[in-house]
Length: 187
Image 1: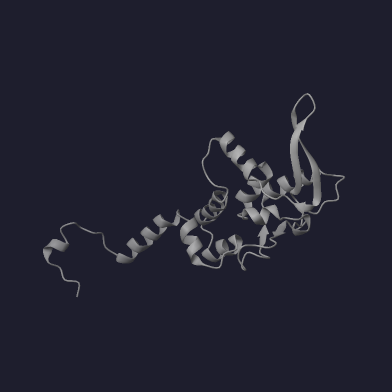
Image 2: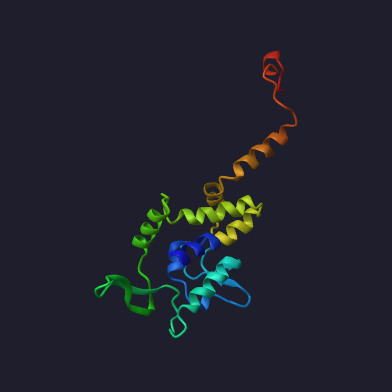
């Protein structure tokens, strides 16, 4: 789950976008990732520049499979226990098919880390971090692959204080509690 979590936090990709990821979508020289099929039209085909952590993880992950001619980043496989040692191992790996789901793996990782959140929360973390870095709304929306501003409102809770300061700056005056009681007119 570690590579999956790192990709989610550093790219904002949805679970299915990561699950269906192929090596052809990653350019290790120029360092962008092209998202395949996505939930939204704006998400499909979007280009995400990869940061150092994401490139390092992708490079490491690829190095774990030097002799495998796989195209799928997370291939389908089954897990079981081996011999007398009862060690966990994978078998029946099919590099032509993507992993079906990782709910059990996510739940195990979540419990081990003692956190209670859904996998999708990692995407919110990415988007909130972008918003906190003062990235423009259009940049955040392009990286997240969403065409609506509603996503920005849901995911970037951090911007509320910025909105409050902006609205306060528009007023040009500080509010005095007795000011309205003095009979001032707004007309």
